[in-house]
Image (cartoon, rainbow, N blue to C red; front, top):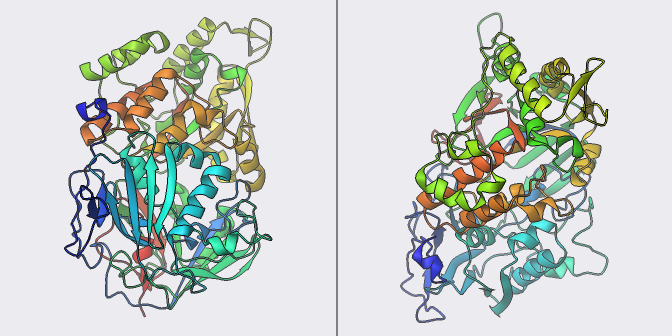
Length: 600
């Protein structure tokens, strides 16, 4: 912990430009046009556009997308319901996250941010031209209403995120101040800066409930609004031609399509065939079989589609997730033994066409990963919790299960059987049973039938150990409801924190989230050491400090065998019809679709 934190201060690397005409409300405060987690902002105060956006991109035409599933609400603040694709972006935020910086935000509704040296408060100065789609000005009262509503009645992660903000007040129609009860983390200020502002005059009407799932198109403020939809079948958004922020630097060259339509399909096979028939324009296709076989050139050698791997620096992984709330997974040796049955190399060669990279960390594809044995600093950091952590954590790096890809996993099987024996299991009629004679069995809950093809080999290997694992594939609605109530044994889930992770670590792995209704700690892992490392990571003030804590988090979760990492992709697998264009420079921390356009 740095001296700044010991003294009760937050040192935050905010690189800013002070406006010559600005008059800070506090003589010791600074007015900034952007915030950065790191040492410098890429863009100065007078920048004209993000470098990955083409300011001369033509406006017009349409973008048609396809997704699998359904939807039953446009209200992304409701704790229940399945959001329509694109509905998250109906509301503009205070500030916009740049796609080519690890963690920096720039002004949108808030044109400037003001803060004192000790960060006891932060004030957002709103753009006086900011408007909702009905012409009402976006004011500080709307910001106050949004914050207070989400903190009081919003989904649990809002209460966790905003817990140390003890007051918000409108200083004027265009200035709103947030005060903190303790020194705030960098990530909290940056996340707060991305607060989507709601229209108080709309949601305060007695017939409306901000936290109720509804298909009534809401009054919004973003670059697009809902034009038409059919529940569960499609939704079309139209570009707002008089959008107040169209010419701001953060939007120049973005939001170029007049119409964006998303069609919904029952499964990915049907969606793929619809794409090949031209029913929609673009797929992000991480299905190895489709990527390798579905888009081959015609007999004349002419490619019908454009396939492109767009490199990214996003981090994370997909994994099998144990629900540690279930007694069957109470013992670490059992979880460790089960992990041995995942033969990634065989699956990658025989099922995935070599497309995937084996995940080795919660932060795969990043410098935050614990890809080496622990340093002396990490050992000292974790020493107070040595009793609740395995000895191997202090001497070696955690590594995923290795095989030669032949399908022969005899050595791993032998180790797994030994750990199961040590956990108290024995064979009875070719089935593993515990000391009470209860068989070792569990269900793997899926929502995508395509996933069955690689889960089946995993289940087959488990059966060789005497473990009865079953597969249950349900529709999206049932799946979401079961996940929200933690009604599962094992699932497949993607963990993709921001490139500079903060409060999402608490959501993914924190004890409070494990106990919350609809919490995001799906595994249910609860360890004091993990909670402390998460708190430290959230309060980190430099990349070096953050890295020490994320590597400790990585080791704790993986050596605890709360998950079985599967794979990651260091690129966006884009497939699209000719006519769509994008800038040559792609943002490394975003898929960049907001910068695409149609060329005629």
